[in-house]
Amino acid sequence: MGVQATVVFADLTGSTAFYVALGNEKATRAVTRITQWIGEVCEAHQGRVVKKLGDGVLAVFADAGNAANAVIAIQRGHQQRLLKWPDAIRMEIKAGIARGEVVEVDGDCYGDAVNVASRLSDLSGGNQIWATESVVAEVDDALGLRFMSLGPVNLRGRHEAVPLYKIEWQEDARTEFVTMQASLADLERPGAHQVGHIHLAYLDVNRSFSSHDIPVHLGRADQAEFFIKDPRVSRLHARIAWRNGAFFITDLSSFGTWVRFTGSDTDVPLRRDECQLHGTGEIALGMPFNDISAPTVHFSFSPQGPSFYGTTG
Image (cartoon, rainbow, N blue to C red; front, side, top):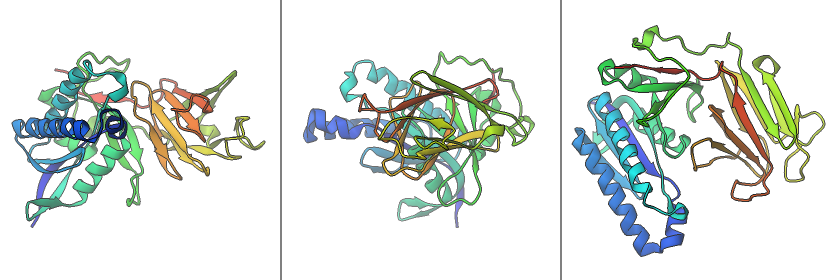
């Protein structure tokens, strides 16, 4: 018989470069110390560490607020640690939080919430915390946590897009969107009736598209709405679509697409996959960002983009 629980999956990014820079022995000791510390923070917030998976930690909490506060404490503590590290060996933390029925067998736990938390950790960028709507709904308003709606996002294995939120954990975070104390049911969520605008820039080409112009294809074919003249770019390399009040990019190419959000050093690689675009950032086509010659498109949104939801104390 399963129980309702909040599942946290926290994962270190950039560990491959870390091992290359330090060597296996030193890197292993450092990663082990960090994952041990992550587990201790979870336990200090009344969570239970289920297992450590190399450079990741899986933990379960009875209370969603404790889970969210644990991951916020982890991000803030690790950010202080990174101030002392050289840029070449920086490992950031990304985390996913989901809530649902969890079944425990021989000390391990299983269930849809476990799978979703792991998937959110994979999809989120470094220094980010992504959470499901079920987590946000269970967090006490009195905690004063702030959430940014990412809109409905397609997750592998799900027939319908899942509404997701990003937890704003930076202590000095500022937003142009007003947050107010309200229950989740009272919040207006992005809908298909809204109009969004995305701005794309490549070299001296700057174009804006509204959600009525969608889909927009990026590529070197004449029929591509956003033309990029570069042999490494496929004829129709990627497609930007509009669904349920949000923009999504899908890789259509043979060599891949990479997305980097402003403020994150972690890239989201796409191979015939998709991710939601939010905030501002860049899209590398055919080559990853570590190749400085990679064809790179900057993207941004007008104020009709993703909105902030949350509470203020």
